[in-house]
Amino acid sequence: MTYRPTVRGRRLARELRRLRELQRLTLQEVADRLDWSRATVSRLETGQTRPKPNDIADLLDLYGVPSPQRDALITLAREAGQRGWWTAYADVFTGSYVALEDEASLIRTWDTQLIHGLLQTEDYARAVITAGRMLPTTEDIERRIDARKARQALLNRERAPQIHLIFDECVLKRPIGGPGVMRAQLEWLLELAERPQITIQVLPFEAREHAGLDGRFTILSFPDPADPDIAYVEGTMGDVYLESAEAIASHGERFERIMKQAMSPEDSAPLIAEAARSSP
Image (cartoon, rainbow, N blue to C red; front, side, top):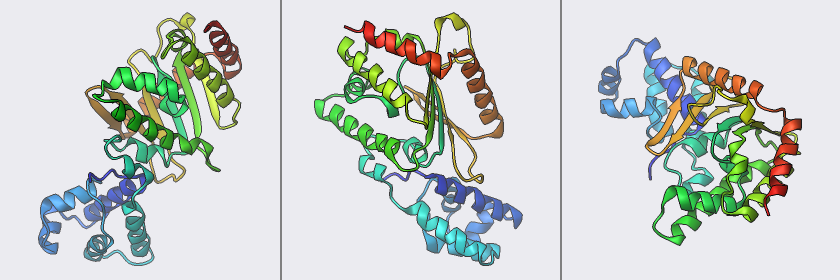
């Protein structure tokens, strides 16, 4: 099973690299001293392999890391190595996004075509998945529907993340799944918008050119300051995760600009309601 690093896994990987660099050791030097391959050390530092507490302990001993920091990092390795609920859907979730989304405290997302997957109704999601994924069988489609419903469970947690959704007005005009499905989806959005942790804004046609013309993206923020934001861009040719400070700052500014041009949540709700009433 392919390992999908969690937020804790990425934090551990960054710390392992930092500790090695403090000792002025190369990947090959670490590998030689532990009788490992260079690739093994590299995969641990890039979060490409599930960390084993014993291996992490060996690295920390080599780097001379004392307790309590040593104990904390070994505990982090145990937590990072735990399998999340999404591993039951490894055939559906092929990237790291869901593992990261599951730990986010703030999700900011912009889309030009669709309602974000977390806020989709089952029928709307079925229409999107059927048309967009071009899957061979009904069973494949239903498998993805089940996975999406499992993913949406985070909306009802005691400590549910803050979600700030902005989408283009054209999303209201395209009757995904037909008028009835679209009406139910928009009514569900209005219900969700009443939750204190969910903010929904519509970017109107009157905004003309805007900072979101390059396409959809999501920014994930986490409760621990040690975990930097991650910008995620999904595409048909693969998913991209942006973690550099420059890339995150750029996407954060882009989101702020879109937000300023969008209608307020209070003004967006009547527009969504009108679109729902217009669906026969």
